[in-house]
Image 1: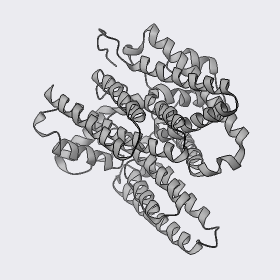
Image 2 (image 1 turned 60 degrees about the horizontal axis):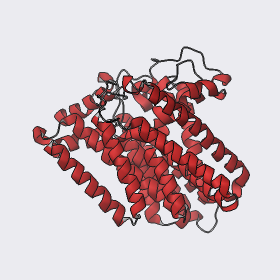
Image 3 (image 1 turned 45 degrees about the vertical axis):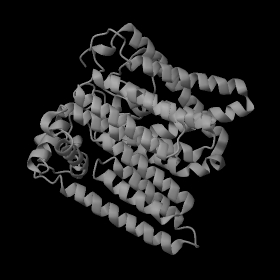
Image 4 (image 1 turned 60 degrees about the vertical axis):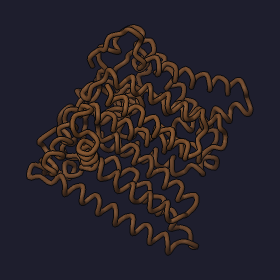
Amino acid sequence: MMGVGILLTCTIAFELFVLWRLRFDAFVMGIVLGGTFLYLDYLSYTSVGERNYDGASHLDYIQTLASTLRVPEVFSCAVCGHPPLYYALGALWSKTVLPGGWVPLELGLQWLSLLLFFGFLVFALLIIRSCTEQATTLRLAAALVVFWPSSVLNSVRVHNDSLASPLMLAALFFTAEWDKSQRSKHFTAALVISALAILTKASGYAVATTLLLVAAMRLRSSEVRSLALKQFTVAALVFATTGLLATMLRTSRMLRTPCQLMFGSACNSRYVPPLPDSPSRFLSFHWHDFVSRLETNPEDPVLNRFAKSSLFGVIHLGETFADARHELLARWLSWGLLAMVSVCLGGALLLGRASLGRYRVYAAAVAIMVLFLLAFRVRAPNEFHEDFRHIFPVLVPFCLCYAKLVARAHRYFKFLGYMGIALALLMIACSVGFFLRAPGSSVGAG
């Protein structure tokens, strides 16, 4: 208990210091700290393997790397085909911060995930602040990101997404800043962080592609064409070298296809959906099933599974969340998500390309991530490849878009603005109610 108390004190102090240094106000600090306490409550009744179907494999990878200082053979565990950066960080954390058993290894790694998720929140706040000058918009978007249901799920998950997501979001932030200011330091930061994301998970190729796209767009300008060509060439060479390194680290005689070389065992044919893929499977959406059920079925359309995973993931949450209260809250959250998506889509159509031009990096990144996920799902049919967590950074532009549209509506139609704020607060309240353990309740197994 003393070890947990020390970790908690250090975590709160660290978060407050970072947010203070970045000049966020007390309200935003309160939002982040409130989210941290919710994540800690969720941690108190969640083990490494709960709501994290391959958590034990990630733990095995870390322990193997810590004990042998070598990357395990690709097929020695379910996730051993992933690049090693996250697992190297986990091994270093276990050797330097957790020696002596003063904190159990599993708890210590979950706490590492909590700190990494704080990094995700920091870059989310920086992105939101860079796109709005209104304090209320910043606070509303920040609260949505912090208390979003899948934020709670991912906050303490022992998984390489714990490092991949903040790296991807940081790369997008510096890419957008480079696009606006043309400062070389922003390009360098985006380049290095994108390469680190590739060495963490194949999802990093999406942010690398975004950076290359922005660099290619600069080639059209005659004023900076020479520098733009140099930067594009450097980025292409760095990403090609990083991708080759990531591929070489998973080389095995058992890997035969290009897909396996790039994504490892994720390209195996297990968990193939029971229904064959067709256009309707990707384009249809069963709204009644979406709002009436907490979980999805393998037979559900891809859009149903993807949208639901943005709230609750793709696996069964367990008996802890199987009562009537959680089912009611899940139904409200599902309705709320549909309403928020409708607002964002309608707003994007009404505002047009001109108004969205200043956010072109984030808009392009969202499109690229979704296309990459869709291509991955088509190439490797697997219900876990329909999971929103692969493109989790998309949550930040989505919440920012919603908050800005609410602020715009409030400027012209105050009633619509208040309705938008009420919907956001309802989503936040339902998410907190869904995950906050009721006083006196027993800890359920996932």
